[in-house]
Amino acid sequence: MSKTLIQKVDTAIKLLKTAEQQAKNKPQKMVKVPTPSWNTICGGCDGVEYNALIDNNLVEVSYSGGKDSDVILHLARMAGIKHIAIHHRTSIDPPGTLQHCISNNAVIINPKETFFQIMERKGFPTRRARFCCEILKEYKVLDTAVQGIRTSESRKRAEIYKEPQICRIYGNKKNRVEVFLPILDWTDDDIKEFIKQENIQCHKLYYDDKGNFCPEHRLGCICCPLQSTRKLKEDFEKHPSFVKAYIRHGKVWFDSHSNTSSHANSGIFTRFSYTMYSATPMRNTHANTAILLLANLQNHCLKNILR
Image 1 (cartoon, one colour):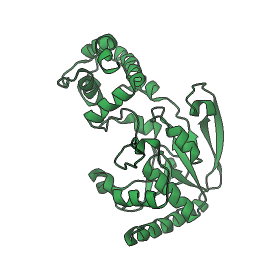
Image 2 (image 1 turned 30 degrees about the vertical axis):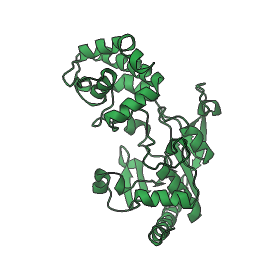
Image 3 (image 1 turned 90 degrees about the vertical axis):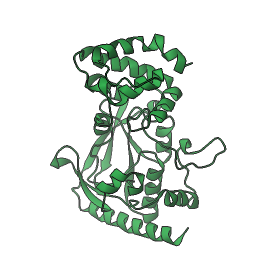
Image 4 (image 1 turned 90 degrees about the horizontal axis):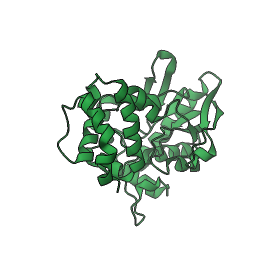
C-alpha cells in the first residue's frame, strides 16, 4: 500500500472512531425497520415482510453494495467500531445486489413503495425530478451514519461536500443525521489499490468476463435517469422485462394525467423514446402523443430491442 494511501486509511479510521463516539451519545432506543423475506432476497416475490430492531447507538454504514460501500464497510471493520451495514432496497437494484449485501451481513430495508408504484403516482423520473431517490434511498434510519461519498466522483459533489463531517436533514429537523465521509478525498486509484491490497470481493458487476476488476463499472439503479443515453440503451437491452414494466406502469400515469406534458417533454421519457426508436429525441411530444406511444411500443418497437 502506498504511503499516501496509508495516511488516508489512518485518517479514515480516526474519523470512524469519532463517529462511534458520536453514536454512543445519541438517544438510547431501538429502531424498527421492515425487511424482506429470504425468498424475496433470492428473487421471489412472496410479499412477506418482517420487522428488525436496530440499536440507535450503532454507527450506520450506508451500504449500497457498490465498491465505495465495500471500502467503507471494510474500514469500519478495521477500525473495530460498533456498526451495522444497512442497505436501502429500491426494487430496481441490479441483479445480484441483494445477495451481495447479505453476504456482507447488511440489513436490507424494504421500501414503503416499489419504484413502479411510485411511477404510477408521480410519472417518469428525470435528472431534475429524482423523486425516486428521495423516496427509495434518502431517508433516516439511525442518528449516526457513514457514507462512501467521494469528491472525485463528480464536479457537483466536489462543490457540495467540503468537510468529512456534515449534518443531513431528511424532510424535517426531527430527521437529522450526523454523517461521516471517511473516503471523501479518495481517488479512483486509491479505491482500486485498497480493494486489491485488502482482497475485497466486490459485486460481480465490477468484474469482466476474465475476472478482472473494473472500477469504472457503475452499480446503480436499473435505467437511472442520471446515466448517459448510451448507458440507458444498454440497460434497456439487458433488462427487457424492466422495459415492459416501464411501459405498462408509465402508461398508468399518462392515462391519469392526459393534460400534463412536463414529463413527456423532457428527462428520461425523451431519452427512453430516443433509445427505443434510435431517432431524434421527441422533445416536443405532448402527453396525448405519449399515451399513443406507450400503447404501441410493445407491438411496434419492442420486438427490435427485446429480440
